[in-house]
Length: 434
Image (tube, rainbow, N blue to C red; front, side):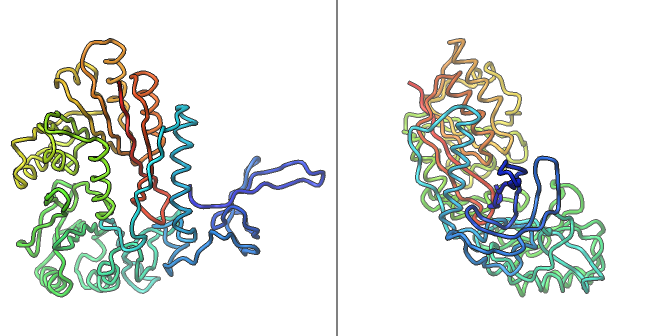
């Protein structure tokens, strides 16, 4: 789903011919195009001229749209973007599992620009381009886009792209720093420098001066994610907040956190209202990460158990529960949720409600385990499940198991526009069992 046009050639006798996928075109438009890949049954092409524009076409805000691969839908009206994502969700549910939600939830959406609080920027010293480039990859390329600003990054981060180029050019390891990972917190922006060689004293001085001028915090990563350590300054905490629930969530810049903080706040509120935990409920939060849903749930439930596949994140979630004073209502465990069985779920005891927030691979093993418990009749099942998804196809697959084999009803589903101007489809679904 890249907001492209799809056409079909017609032979002289009127017989339908090849399908043409035209990047940069929108449905209903009349365009001229240039093909770059020809196959017997289809062609891939790019727009040359727009002869009759769609009413849904809008002027891209970013000067680098079309070259930079970070966004794919800036030329499409935002309301249409959300509607298309909802259609993708509904089509996946129907075509993969023959399901239609009883209710279509209102989409969760927010600002279209300046929302991306996490990003991984590639760094290249390119002599032909005049020096160091810092940015996203070019569209369908390993080259780095020659970009001097970015409309989806927060304005203060966008304004740092050119200064970051100059900073890297001055470092002794300019050719040994392949990426900069950024994470924006409520009090500071962290920049993680992937350093393949140690920095020297002159480099340290440059980094400190840059951090003071731009109010950022540098971290260094010499090897894998576990080697990330703060460099300067050391006295500013990196965190985000969930004000509705009085939660402050410390995190490391390499921890998984949602890209869009504003949408995350709305998403957490929606998920908890759908789950409707009470003071008598025991809730299981699967793929809990650092506690994004677990800690707010602990404010409203008798007990919440968070399970995560990473020991590091499990430890961080426990520390965050203590930080927020909800450790008396929470427990955490490290388990491989991609291999969980019905017996594993039974061993955890009875839970009134589940919250499931898996990665793109979905929660296939969890869904199969619930189906096995339902079909065996041995063991308790949650009355209600809220499933937060970042992949509509795996949500649809798992929903089919929950409905057709575990006896749940798909009470509602809707999209979450976590990544405006891109093709990423996030969603939330509610399942109930009588």
